[in-house]
Length: 328
Image (cartoon, rainbow, N blue to C red):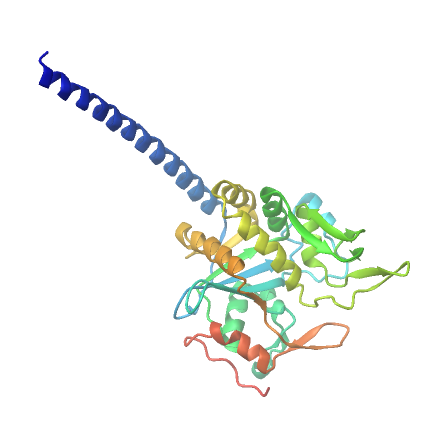
């Protein structure tokens, strides 16, 4: 082989090898992406759908995220573990969140008190969380009718869904300034400091409504307790959102929790991916808040709307909904 031909061969051979390497890498990447996409599609199909008509937000999509307290939806040991003899049958919303995925600023997540008093002007007075007893449509309609909030998508989680998601994420951490317990929820943190919680413990932390602290050798009500439960729930959601930034962990969380969730029929794979990303962005930016309200010191907690409530909900109001008029 002449000199020029040998030179061309030496140049062509590395290029050919490079093309083969690129081709192999492309096939591998496509296989991995295809596998992840297939798993994601399987995960979405494992989430049951609910029939609900949404009024829409008229702008950046808004998700309604609910945690159900239904014992009837639990199975086996879970039904016994969370049995409550004074709890009426049916389904109520233990936690109510609104997640705005875009618009001015970063995505934002707000917790709406489940004890918010609504429906009085329609001769149907009740606490907001009770709306779920009539089904998801009643909850969506109440938000639209009484608060002027239109949502685009609905996702409901049952008790074990949080347990499974936390366990799949490797647990969450919380910090207490001293011993803390709640006999109602089963919370028991008997020392000060940081505690790493598994799924069942995280649920007890989230559901804690009447915590007690240890003072002078006795258990007394915690004066700083959050009657909305939202501060504890937000801590856990923030850590789950951070864990979901890792695709492998997100996949593990989704696959384990999927059967414990319900979604509206329009919540496709792309929509749910947008939900996870917006939740991660809101938590990361610190755009997480609790809607303020005026709580009445009654045996059954009731929260009433005031100007602060109206201001906090203003960014979530939609032209598709007209809130009922009321005095502040």
